[in-house]
Image (tube, rainbow, N blue to C red; front, side, top):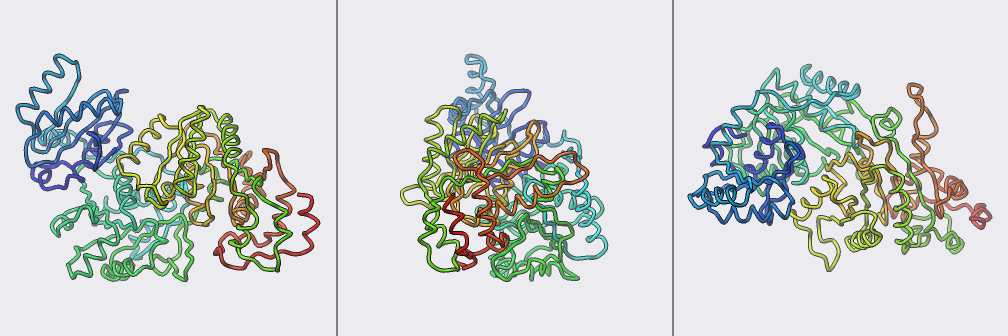
Length: 577
């Protein structure tokens, strides 16, 4: 972290900001969030302490900070509605900055604080040499941790953990590695396929680290030299950066443990190169640990080739049945089905793509918003994510919800996948997520944001609207609402289906969570219900059950695969729908 002045001077500005976040957590701040890197509008870190919102502006410069930075921070204080402004400067402050601070405190009663590098070192030295994690460990998590550590200390070279979203797979990995390092000071390389996930992983590991344990982020934005790589206890890297380093014939430092998050992405040439270089999973190589919630792949690659068979596997169904996840009230709506269109289909075997074009009516946003409003009133403290197919649709849904005035919605997306829309900058995304986290925004209309990595445990309403079905993405998105949280008794899921495979997924989910009951629990109020015009629609469910007989094969099929059969005997049934 901030062990000495030399390391502070030699770090990147990005690492400087993240280490401020980490220090604040050790100092007892809560809701610590990195709110911006580029185009941050005068704010880098926001945090809460003693009921006050603190705002930090970080300057990793080669010269002292002047009064202009304090002016910028003061503007950000009002924009972010914060109480206490802090400027953190690696090279300290000049006389104009110090005078500006004195005037603010004397005449404007603004409690602005100035932290220099020496203050950071002193605050770090005060910290007790212990980890922050106080979360209790669930039985299945302890089993997974013992399986991983047992495999490591018995000489096995690999382990695979399959845990559904919300069940704590990163928690399991971090605690396992903490126990290993408590006995042997091994160096760890954590790999992921995106930069956002790399940053999230580093942060997720902080509670399991002592203040003296060092972390390093290695990606295209923060290139590292060999000295830095050799000295860090934990290196969090984007796989393409490690791959490029290797193929440019540079010598990679020795790593004792290779952790791959979202390891269903292995099998690419980049991951293969990293595994080969580290001899990961082999007798004299690094211990290979893989984590995933969705171990399926569309191709022939088997992740067991890299990590072996799962040491533990707990899917969403197991999590729901055993109370590890929030109870689910899943409502599948059939309003947008044009049953009469089925009469025009010719043939006996069809692909999901063919059926989707024929069966579904797309334009029904107003009724979706009305149904969402009703579900909103069912929850005591409603928080919602609406998954949308396009940026344009996300903005449309946001505007329709805000027009009703019962809550505040915002659209969020990463890439400009739609023509006419610019990519949303990191500052704006972080600002929206920060407001959502603090309750200033109640609803997020998301496009490709909440699939992997982001934790929002308080969310208790999910809406699927105009999304194409993918089994992996469906499970990841559904998991965003299933995390347990204080005061949360269930998550309501509104699925406005626009893909026939989603019906198969819904039927499969109902078969799994509603047909059996765990004798160790008094009641499991999980339910999956078909609705039409806000009334239960068992007739459509019955018809779909017969039509989609092999729900597993259909749910996981490619959209062009001819897996759907349409027996003529059903014609009389759908006449009545």
